[in-house]
Structures are given as structure tokens and as C-alpha cells.
Length: 209
Image: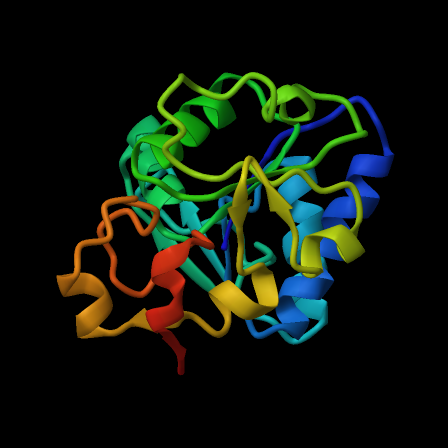
């Protein structure tokens, strides 16, 4: 799960970020983050404290300080091009607040059909993402959350049925050959056969693993 975020105007955003970090660690989900921005730093520190794994992709080509909050660090040396790695390293992207850099990551995630999980109710750019998506293509689901309970429970929106964090990311589903060969044309999986997000007539052939 990629965690994208910057400093936000509402202190409550940091509380929600901390709860998200604890939740993801408890579910056994690796958190991918730069770890340097205030909101995501809180999330990854809580994830590590809860025994979770945090992968930090940092822009320079040198290692960060020894106290950097991560269990694995990748000094990619790509500068702002690192945004593409952040957008695609997770099965989905949590978005907390955000400015230009986060907006670019969200747009890249959208282009590559990664579900977007914007924090709402705490101000910042992520608050309006559901009503102002990157464009009109409906490439991926946008699933707002305002508490860890909403982040964890199955939810629905935009006419779709979704497997949420515990079910979809930690326990993905696989589409049978019959399902695939009979021609699902919804593109909800983004081309990956184990990432169906739709609840439609084809879903009768989904089998859990």
C-alpha cells in the first residue's frame, strides 16, 4: 500500500495517518512511502511500532540518516521521477492532504488503474478528490475514508462492489480461466487477472485463494 501525503492544515489528519499505519501493519500489509513528509512519517512510525514493514523510496542516490523510519530503504537517485515508483509500488494508494508532488503521484496512479483512498474531513487536497478526479475516464475506484474503521470495512461507491484492505490487498482473488476467456471487458483489474474490483455478472467465477 503506497502512502502519499504532505503537511495538512488539520491536526486530526495526523491522528488518522497514525491509525492507518497501525491498521495496515496489523493486517500484514507493507507500507510504501518516502517517509519524509509529516503526515506519512506519522503513519510509517506507527506501522513500524506495530511490527509492520515499511519500504521507503527516497529521491537522492544516498542513504538517509540512520534514524529514518523505515525497515527497507531504496535510494533511487531519480529525484521527482521517483513519483512514478511511489504511484505503482502499491496495490492501492492512501492519499493524505497533498500538494503538487502528491497530485502528480495520484495522477500517475490513476493512469495505471490503482485504487485511490483519500482521507476526507481533515482539509487538504485529498478532501475533494472524490468529486474532482484527475479526469473523466473513471480509471480506478476512489474510496474516501475519515476513520480507521472506514478504512478497514468493506465499502462501496460509484456503482461498484469492492474488496477492501483486509480482503482485497491482503487476500487477493484470482479469476478462473473460464472467467477470463468468456470475455470480461470491464478492465477493472487494470490488466492484472488477480485484481478484479467489480461486482458484476462475471463475479460468479471468482474463486478466493
